[in-house]
Length: 201
Image (cartoon, rainbow, N blue to C red; front, top):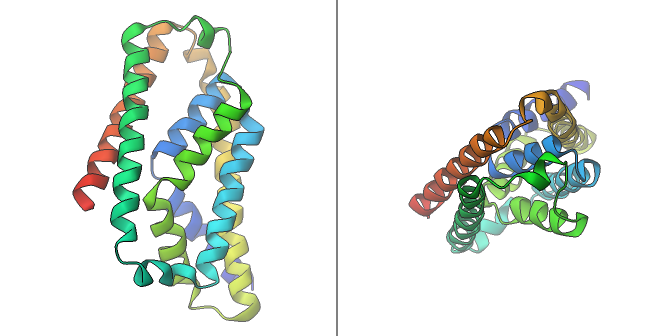
């Protein structure tokens, strides 16, 4: 049982550690110290739902609907391109008065963005419904449940560590120039991911 849980934790953590749009957004909110708890809960609970679906065997969905991955990839790419453009525009304008004062978008808007980064990302379905689901097939019964709990725990540990650990970088992010560099880097990540989705579609 413990071995299955540890395997699930390591599997989930290895998949989520890659730099992605969702992680970059959580990091940015962590630096702002705004809506961190609800955003981390949203991301982790969304992962929990997807992991549960993968472990329960819904990974067959993409086999039943072979055109779904392409539609998801193109939709996700469009979203990432728009958000990347927004971050690049913010970096170009350089108006970070609200950011430096610690102000963020309202809670509703922040959670809507977090949900979009989670549910419009086709890779999350590949990771959770596909890979986590596939690895879970080596376990049966309660051991499979333990595997799923381990993978879910990894998501909670990661997102809360990222969201609240971002405060360690706060002393560096005290100038508009620092935020301009961060937003430019985020835009580059978003557009790189979008290009990868388009090419893989």
